[in-house]
Amino acid sequence: MQVVLLCRAAVFADAQAAKNKGEFSILKTRLLRDSALFDASTTLPDTEGKWKDIDYDDSATNDWQPSRHWLRTVWLARRYRYNVNDRFNDTELAIGISNAVNFWYKKHPVAKNWW
Image (cartoon, rainbow, N blue to C red; front, side, top):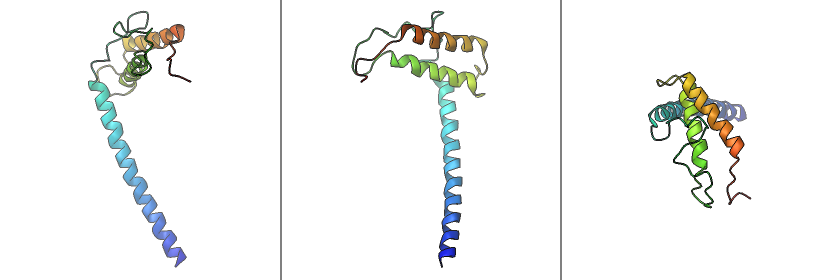
């Protein structure tokens, strides 16, 4: 009886893993598609590596504006990395991402609500 239960558990686990793999594949596809369509923040930072509409000296304890810098940088990196859009392996995009990362480490903004 225990062997039968173990076999059933193994079959169920395999079926669940296959289902999860399919769901993760769907999520990955949607994220990549959404990153390709994400226009508001996919403009490149300036040559210094910052976006002009972000207040890097913001001291708000919620909705801290500099956090948008990393959100945008990650979206740009996704556009650069995944072959689902016209910016895949784009040199100008790679330079923009690099400038954004370098700016962050030079500026080193710190949120007031970080303990």
